[in-house]
Image (tube, rainbow, N blue to C red; front, side, top):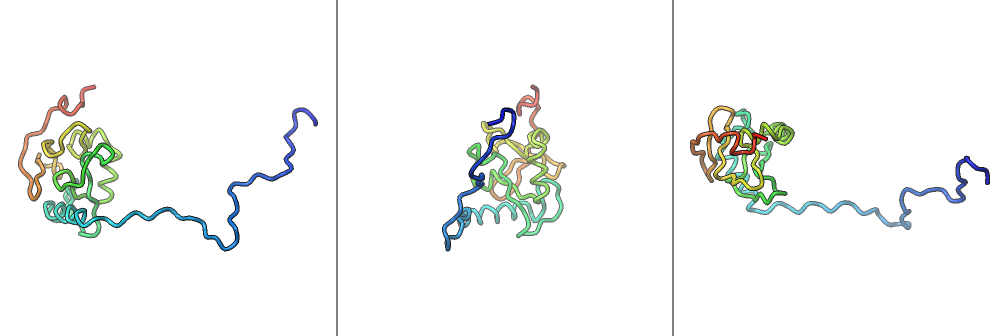
Length: 150
C-alpha cells in the first residue's frame, strides 16, 4: 500500500441499513392528544385575556394563540391557568428569544420563583398578578428581586 494516499475501501459506506422488502420505515411517535384539563386551561387563559395578547395587547383568535408557561415546563412549571398566559405565536417567540427582557417584564420566571406571586407587565402598560379568572393590580419588583444585578 502506498503511503500518504487515501485508504482503499472494498465495501462502500452505508448511511443507513436497508429495510427488508415490504417494511415501512418507523415514524416518530405522535404526541398524545391534549387532555381535557389542558383545553380548560387554554379557555381560561383566553377568557382572562379578554381576547387580547397578554404581551402586545393586540386581538387574539381563539384557535390562533399560544398558551405560554411563565415558568418553563422543564423547570417544573405546571399546566395551571395562574402560571399560563395567552400570547400570539410571534410574541411567544419574542418572549423566549429575549430572556433578560422577559424576566424583567415578568413574562418568564426563574425556577425558584412563584409565577402566582410574580408581577407581570401586562401589555407593557400596567403591572398585574395573574389569578385564575382575573388580573390583580401589583407593584413592579426591583431588579435585585429577579436577579437582574449580576
